[in-house]
Length: 146
Image (cartoon, rainbow, N blue to C red; front, side, top):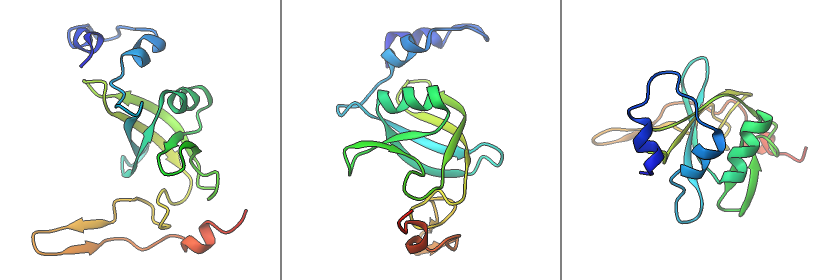
């Protein structure tokens, strides 16, 4: 945990710090990334987990359109650029250690590449796992050439 995040533990409600100072103190991993949980703003449903680098986070904060870092593609990934299922930022929060980001978003359609509302659709039990939601849109249709 950075010294700044240790200091924030004891500050009063309403304390304000420059965003750049906070971003400088984030615990980016060795690849320069931070894990991000996207949550539907109204229902608080957890939609997905992804990664951001500083550029993606700054773009998201600046534009209000959520942008992630695609580890598989090695480039910025603006949510919905190939599917049309855009995320609009409503609020962004860092955890107490500055190593995880929570985004409250307004999600258009499914968040998951499988066409489901949420990426978290496999419920694990002691002896079995159960798929708990149907796709809202067939992935073949979702990712058809736009």
